[in-house]
Image 1 (cartoon, rainbow over the protein chains, first blue to last red):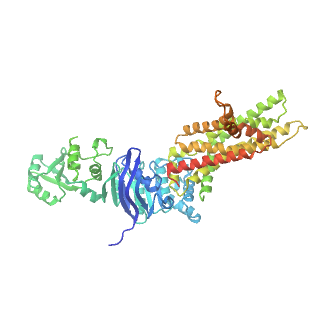
Image 2: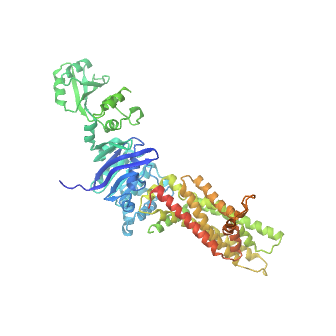
Image 3: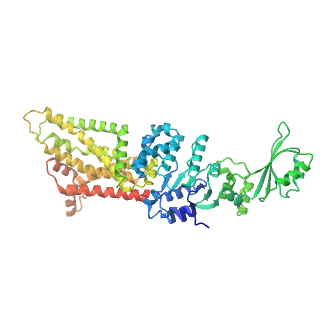
Length: 349
Length: 253
């Protein structure tokens, strides 16, 4: 097997702020060219971990290496290799876009002969060319966000760290940034944190879920689903009685549960969501059971992938009243395989 | 120090494009012009032996009290409050370069403001009676003192700004430090408790820290190297402390 090349290696990283342990022993590795998403509730330790990786904050203990250089002992080496966009994207409001990027290019030691060309190139990539001579303070939030992203990718860094890069952008801009980040795949290692979970799912090769300063889930979105979601969900549209439906589905699985049932539309079809504990493909069985019952007419049947929100909830074990994301499932459905006991408590809430 | 020029150019550029720079310069010159005029009016009613330029320099601390805090309070504190210090310190710049660039930009601006006050003396000497004796040395000495002490006062201001993220606190601390250095330094020997015999070393120390005496010396043409050493060493010490604070808080090395 080929030896994997890691650009970011973190071993048992800890950071304390007085009595508060913001990061409590995090370890992970990021391969070269990989895009990694950091997920976690506010205050989970995402930004602190990112700051430690950029050399801005010192870790209390543990080792973080960027391209093989330890962050603590060789901050200069890593600062040349990291493009960073902090949370809230701070920018000098009095400068013009091009002026600011040229200054940043000088600070980031871009060779003189490439400087102007590179600044024009990143402005083009981030769709900033029409705002090049505008004062940053007078730009809309979307433009400012893109100035921050342009700055992060400016000096061809080997590692890009962006703290919530798509916050405040409209859907067009989000797609543009998503494509931009995806275009970096294979060339640069990217760490992004975001609250927009579908965003992370679409862009990232690996997702790291942090809660309370610890990693609670790590892997590709599918691996995480397998770890945290222990039920299979189907959505169907049927014309018929609910009792008949229950009767005909009894043979599929004994513990099958009808989670949702909507009012019939003008053509008499209702949308039904059923959940079957355990991860298994019941599609064919469902089809045959439904077609066997003459009292039920089926218009559609599809398996629903558990959204990353559910994985996130299950992993961070947060009661869902406190979450601001729009959740569509009941708390009972987020039962974690490993923490059954705790989830059953959450379900009672 | 390869980024020093880049940082300094940016600091100067930010000063040049900010309207507050011009407003502050205008108000400074207005106050100084008003002071000079008062001095001349005083001389017109009651002739004195001393050159009015010397009297003008004796009042140098009045603009220092308000200009230094206003000029330096935003240097580091504002960057910290807006968060731009984070993007700055995660590039390959060092804390030394950042502090020195801010100090130098402030010092250039401060020197420029004082240079404008040179026009007062030119105007004055172009209108005095022809038989008046023109003695340039008190003016040269006075400006030399302003230049040397300015380094210290601005480094005190930068130090105060490096301590905090609030510009208001930075301004208050900066004012207190400058006020402390000028007033306490000048009247150190008079501050001993009356019922305690003043130790000899207090008197010796007071001789070194008497800011008003330094000004009098310089504006009468006495260039005292002890004062130069004091101001230079103190400004270096406070700049060094500011660098340490920035390194500690923002992780730059």
